Length: 203
Image (cartoon, rainbow, N blue to C red):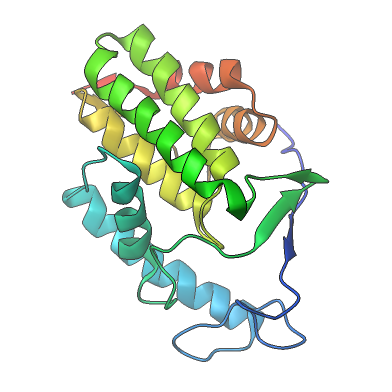
């Protein structure tokens, strides 16, 4: 199967809050300004931290736990790990949640998380709730970088709390990749429900 090509992100960051001047490379703790080397460093650091989380996951009860996951994954690379982005983001001309609305987004997502933990008690309900949480978390897009990796770990943790494994591996399986990408990019919760129905495995 040929994989679809999805557009990249556009950032409104005229003051280079996150990037080196005249560059798209994110300011990092290694002061690595070469794009390829910086990406490789980030990949290795996050992969190592992801393995640690796989063994000892962070339970997700509120948005503050999502911030903890991002910080755990990215603190070796970025000083702002675990902090909300301070710039606005769009993709294909469609804006993600503006930073001015983060308080509202946090409260709404906390409600979704609470409802999930209290009321999702079978696979159908869990798939439906996880799809809604992922859709809203993706629109929230709270971080300058690392949203996808963080949200996949968040979903894995939430599934574990209900007695299910849910590993969203988009690297090898094209069907999983397209369900995940179409679901998140286009806000299609039916695709996300299909994704979770395929992935959820009872422990």
